[in-house]
Image (cartoon, rainbow, N blue to C red):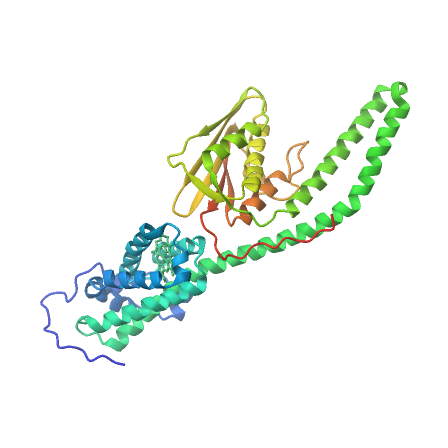
Length: 420
Ligand code: HEM
């Protein structure tokens, strides 16, 4: 329904005072496909910019009403594990978000600022349908406010409401794109793990027996030849034994990779957990491993056994890179999205070409490694919905694990069945 425009006494000078910029300066930015499809034209930007001043006064009330709706919605309320304090924080953030709706242009830098909102909600476990529903609450409230305010001169309710709807659609698209990106990367992971699963099951089935035969025959040969064997023969037998052990370790590693299960999350005290992981990793006397106390101490929710394996792989990897001498620092921190645990060493860095491949299964630069430790660490972190990243300079590398705080109702990576 078109709202009749109240009579306005024209103001002297510019009829609006806000951070709105003229369409001439705004339309210079190239428009992306979404902006074109949604017809986010310079006129839409002009209307939205002119609405900023009259709408700003309405936004705290809209945020309050939104917050009351969340409180009445059990599924939405369940997401706020930080209680009332967290709800209040979200209300303030929402008022800021609403205000920026009226600050065109809707260009790349606008999109970049808004994309964080999708990521925060994804990581907080807010279902995407809840986000669509919540956007509809905001639509109703904003359109209601449009009816209440005195529209700037020359603006009509119909065109103004349509401009607002387009910008809300644009923002909803930005939020949902985080959900789609996440889904795509999960699907890729599931495909990759399924493939590894098929290979591992086949390798386990086909290789365990011949490896067992080689191992037993070598042992028998050794005991039969006993003292009569020449040094050369003994060397060759020892080589066969080492190779069989390595091949067995690879098969076992693949099976472990296959068995990364849905994490059983526990509340874990980070500092004592990391101290205990460090204690368990053997290292030469010339290598020091230090836990650097973080600015934040506290607890995090993850599967202790799995993350222990992931972190201890990273520390082991660092000790192997250092050789006999060097220093490893383990740090932890927490922000509004995730807990991070990092392992840094001052050994030789890793060249970029190698760095690009270090998480690939069976990729190794060590003569004794299986090339599965880092792949397993990554699989564990990803099963928690997190990420594992490596940064290396000319000296030293840092591996950082990020584990999102909450993951409620998120899809999990199914375990591939195996015959082992
Ligand atoms: C379209 C609707 C929504 C908008 C525009 C919105 C906006 C925001 C903004 C701007 C933030 C701050 C992000 C940051 O840290 O940079 C935020 C945080 C948050 N929102 Fe929303 N929100 C919406 C819907 C919801 C819903 C439906 C829920 C719950 C079911 C929710 C739960 C949260 C939580 C848990 C946080 C993190 C609060 C914290 O800092 O601890 N939001 N939201």
